[in-house]
Structure formats: structure tokens, C-alpha cells
Image (cartoon, rainbow, N blue to C red; front, side, top):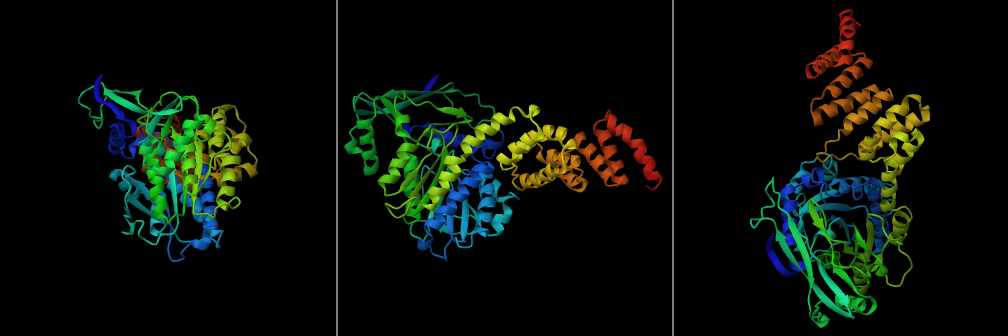
Length: 523
């Protein structure tokens, strides 16, 4: 291994530049092909939870809002755009049913990768929100927060404008931006430093066939930190408290996240809601007895987020913080709220948080749904439908359930068949493709065929053909569906195409003579 960097402070390490290189090079493929996590943080359940908390916040601050100005929602590192799409679906519906709430809003999806912004601008699933004036895009670098220019409207968001409050959404982003690490020993704080090595002295992570291995090693300074040199007074007080209260441990200090919180709090004139989904510790007792930090890796890399510190920081600034009552299972969701009256009772945003995160958290639901889905072949139809209802008819889960549903639907009572049809429509409404290999339209077409909804099935098989290319399964299903619709000429054309693609297809071979004879008879 070749040493590329030695004994650097973690927040100033080259690691964060390597992270940026990965995401810039990958673009949208980071989510569609490189397995960067997103299933929980883009689910219909988390979109619903965030939308309801945001609605509560707008109710809390309605008296301070300028009716002539929109509320800006800013999603940091919006990635594939799937969360924003689903959030907009839910939030727009909520506003329609709550005319007493401030109606003007603009959702701004941000990223530092130009290719990701281009993907959003060209995405037909996002176009209706853009045309309605509810969606815009902006380049934003979390390593250097600066005023944002909206790509569609051309306006610039900065602290000098008469902005309404800001709602900031940060899912799986604070774990990927600079942090520091400090070790507590004998009631003293010691800075952690990092040494980065690689298997090649010529580091080219952008190469498509790059096989570079990276090694990250931590060490601890021998001299304690002088907290009087910490320029951020609120952070200084928090670190002093940690030093006094915690035994031997190592803590992460989310410096870039703190900078981001301050930037957007100023942008919203001191009134802002932050909804942060990530993994990390939210309660003080969880911070004890940690060793040196370890990086998670899956294409990019990430560190746990010290949610407890972020919450304490918000309170130091006169804000409020809500963390889940128990330790999260896979995803912690915390809310930081600024601009509410001090000393008051629970706000509408906090009540919504208690309902959607504490009682019906997307984290717990995701764990249960994954466990249930692993037993799909053994489940009865009512259990499968219960799973799909619980996911909010997530298209990913619907796709996984297709074999089980096909087996159960022929004998299902009419009420469940009707629910299945309605659920399919709901799933399609939330479908947001990013280049995955799963042919969701084909799966939906097969289900609709089984439900004897042949015209709708035909439309989905045609979508499958358009979006995923010719496949003999698709052309055969187009033939079968056309036959059910009594379109004999089209049936014959699709049978011939199926046999061109798969000359040994037995069903197509068996159907063709009968269809040709019926067509000749004018039937």
C-alpha cells in the first residue's frame, strides 16, 4: 500500500475529495447500479412521514409567513430524485385537503453532480411538478454552502432575500460529508487523525475498471485539545459537557452538517425545519465506549452521524430537537426545529413526528416488511396484501410479490381482486424508474391480465416493450392480451414476432395456427 496522506485531521482529509470523485463519476448510476442505499429513504412511508411533519411545521409558523412568498423545501443530495417525487405526490395531496395552510411552495432538489441535475431536468415523471411551479433544481455543494441559483426559475436563494421559513431534507447525506473525530480519555479531548493508503500510487478512481483498494487508519494525538481554541461557542459547550459526562470513548463531530444547519437557518430568517435520515447515535448513553470510527462502504463510504450532538447544537441555538424514543434499527430520523416560541408545548410538527416516527416509524416498518417479504412463497393472499398495504404499495415490493399474487388471484374473492386493481394503480402512480433492471411494467401487466383487465394489461406490456426492449415473454403476453381483446391481426403479428425471437416457444407455436384460421374466417 502506498501512503497518500498521513496524520491529517479527519475533516480535512482527502477522503472527502475521493467521495466526491465517486459520485461525480457515477452520476445516477450510483443509485441504479452501484448499490448506494436508498430503499428505506425513498419509500412511500418515509415520504408520507416527512410530508406530515412538514405540514405540521407550516401550521406552527403560519402567522409569520408572507403569503406572497413561497415556502422553499430544499433536499440536499437528492440523488435519484425518487424521494422528492414521492414527497411531492403526498405533500401536494395534503395541501389540497388543508386549505388553511400556506399553499405556495417550491421543492428544490440539489446535488453537486451536473449529470444528476440533467437526469432530473429530463425526467418525465418530474415534469408535471416543474410545469406546476412546484419543483426546481439547483447545484449545491455541501462542502462550501453558498447561495443557490434555481435552474428553472432563475432566482437565487440567499440570506439577503425576504425568505419564508425553510424546510431542509437530508437523507443519507450527513454521513458522507466532512466530520472530525475526538477521543475522550481522563476527562481530556484528543483529536483523531487519519492516514490514507492505496494499492496504487496513481489514484484514478474515475476509471471504469478501477480496482484500487484504499486503506484508512486512525491515530490519536498525544496532546489534548484546547477547547478555548474552538471558534464555535455552541459546539465548544457541547464538547465540554461530553468531556465531563462521558467515560473513555471516541466521538464524531459533524462539522460540515453543523455548517449546513447554520447556513439554512440563516436562509430562513431563523425559522427552519430539518428532517435528517441517516444512521448514528441519537441519545447520550449510546455515545459511550466507542472505539476509533469505522467507515461503512458500498461504492462510496460513510461515517455514522452524531445525532445527539446535532440535537444539542439546535437547542444551544434556541431550537428544538426530536429523536426517536428508542434506538433505531437501520435508519435514525431526527427533526431539528427553529423559529418556534420557546417554552411552549408540543408543536404540530412534533406531534406529527411522534405519530409518524415514534409510533409508525419508517425504520421499523422497513425491517418488518423485509422480514415478511422473505417468506413470500409461504404467505396467503391476505398476508401479501397486508404487506403491500403496509409499504404504501411500494412498486419495488409489488414487483417482488408478483409470483405469489399470480398463484393466489385465480381463487381470490372479488373484494380482494378489486383491492388488487386499486393497489396496482397506486403503485404505478409512485413508480419512478432510475435505470434498474426490474421490469415493473411487465409485472403489472401480468397481474392485470390475471385480473382480466385486458385493456390496461395491454398498455403495460406496451410500456414494458418501450422501456425495456423486445423480449419473447413480452411479445407473447402482447399476443395473448390482444387475443382476449379479439384483435386477431395484432395477435398474429405478436405471435410471429415471438417466434422470431424464440423459435421454440411452444405456446406461440400452438396458438398461431388457430389464430391464423380465425383471422381467415373473419372472426
